[in-house]
Amino acid sequence: MKNVVWILLAASFTIAACNHDDKVSLINDQAALPATFKFDTLGLKVMASFANKKYGTMSVLYANGEGISNAIKGDKKHSAGEVRALVTWGQQDDPSWFGARIPGSLKSVELVKISTNTTGLITAYAKYSGKNLLAAPDTLGQEARIKYILDQQPSIMP
Amino acid sequence: MRRKIAFVAALMLIAFTGLQFIRPKIKNPPVTADIQAPSNVEAILRRACYDCHSNETNLRWYDKIQPVYWQVAAHVNEGREGLNFSDWKNMAPAEQKAKLWESINQVIAGAMPVQNYVMVHPSAKLSKDDLVILKAYVSGMTPVNKPGDTAKINAQMQQLEQWQNAKFTIGKLPIALNGISYMPDYKNWQAISTTNRFDNGTLRVIFGNNIAVNAMKANNIHPWPNGTIFAKVAWDQVEDNEGNIKTGAFKQIEYMIKDDQKYASTMGWGFARFKTTKLIPYGKTALFATECVNCHRPQKDEDFVFTQPIKN
Image (cartoon, rainbow over all chains, first blue to last red):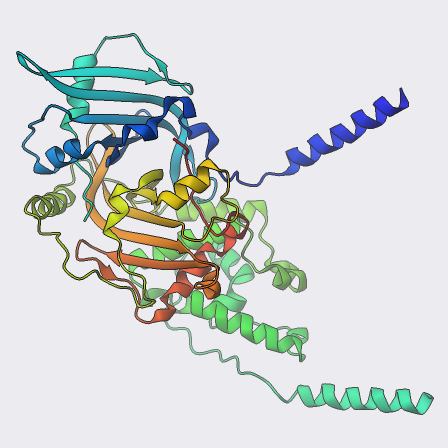
């Protein structure tokens, strides 16, 4: 019994010690994409970055090589094989810099893929929501989202 | 034996007295361009900052005794070099604001006022209430985006057109004064975070090279391994009526290269900044990196890196 008390006491001290540590975490865990989603295997590059004050969100728009060169051309034309992915987070205050906000909890990843069939170009849209990026079956407003994602201008990168 | 002790004590007294005559100079040049701030802010600055960050250094008698005086003089001279409120109006308004945001962040991080200075000068200690006043003062300088700002949009469109016409093609890569070259390949690296810097009206994306990304995956970022490179790109913020804040004109790109041997004198990191789409290297002399070091120093427990990277 005495041993148990000692162990509990020691454990509570350890926990208390951890709680006192208000140091900034090295990694932004809450913004992380789940490893199972394998986002990095899509082979996409950064196309643009933006925030929304009204919704308190931050986003990075990615595209594959084709998507980026189409975006730079700026003629609103798209081609089969083009892929864009929009990653959106809630914002949080930057714990390391008073005067900045950084991505907070992960909200969604939206994928737009353009392919071709006998009638011409077709666009596929998929949305994955929440921390675990679960497939969102809701199709409401898809067209608007596709347009929003395809209409984005590229961030200028010399 | 007793005579020996007396002899040594006498020698030490002579040495101590002698030391008092070897004095570095702390000049107090006339104050011609002092900061103008609300009285409650000015009172805090005068109490906690002015001894080292103005031409109105007020030395106490105990500051003037050698060998302490050496350290005090070094503090004052270094302090004034980094920030001098007596020269305030000689800085451009944008530079003044950036300095204030940087300073408040140094205070929040506990890097300022310098700890051993506060130990001897307890009045310099900043209380929570002081910090509230300073934060409110600095927050009052947050730039406000004008929705649909045509000047900003025009600047962006001009750059976009240059980009479309392949006018960004760079022949010889620009090189900073410390030898670090602009690296166009950053565009193929992964984004490891993004920041909305409302303090200076920019949006930023931070890219990491393969070594950085692999280090993140392996949880091996404390310290970051040699060969790690970060690129941070900053754009103007362009806001519309819907509250969308998008990237406008490209402002600059900054790099941090980890090499604990090569860059030992700058905390193990090589720093460089290239401004505008012309990618003009920042800095007048190779010592420009001191500025980078001073700002990054409070992050020493995070290997001098501000960004908390995001895994994907």
